[in-house]
Image (cartoon, rainbow, N blue to C red; front, side, top):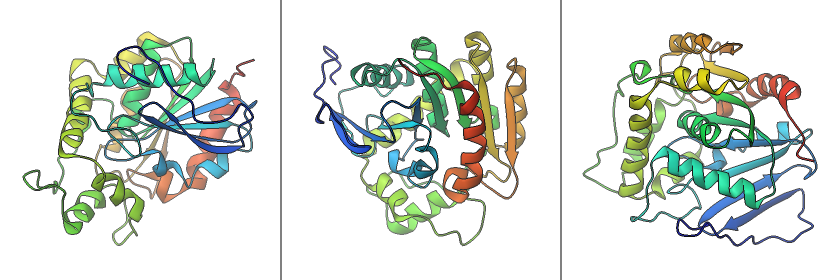
Length: 282
């Protein structure tokens, strides 16, 4: 998929298996589950990739066609220096990918800043987005907890020690085993993509809070928050109650990454929501 003409090359046969990876130009996509099931799109957060959803996917594919996309600059997608990483541009690329995959309707779930990208997608393509689920997505910049330690941006790539210090705040429990894949996702980024994608989330939230945007959209909304989040104040989840009909759930004992800390508990909340709001694309 290119910025110039939106063209793409789908490297998968017409009779795709129930689990496959494919390339849409410079975007990497994973698909799991029955192709005729309701679609659930999962969007990862900053400095992460579609692999962050790996523990959750097997719990979702019994009833969904699960699609994961590595946003530009992340994972196995391209990392160009001459392209915009602004959230509206990232959302536009995701929308084009859904077009190429023939997805007419999807429930969209985003983790952390992936929830910001999901909101941007719903703003651009309300015809495609049936409902939204935001997992530990800060509603505004006021909810951000100042990081105790940040990667030294003067050095790239970061050292293993810097990576582990950076990733540590994504979990609630001291001594939690940080998946090596999570560290690899940061290692495979460039200094340019790391800083630009982080800045993009800041810029989008600075323009307007997510509850204000979501109120205008009028989409069914589920908010899941690990109660012990060390990156975004979990009490800020209450801000989403300003969105008419929003369902807000706090998960005690979990931090910023419930999709990794307790996949089963997270999937149970997500499935209860999608059962009501999924729509088939036929």
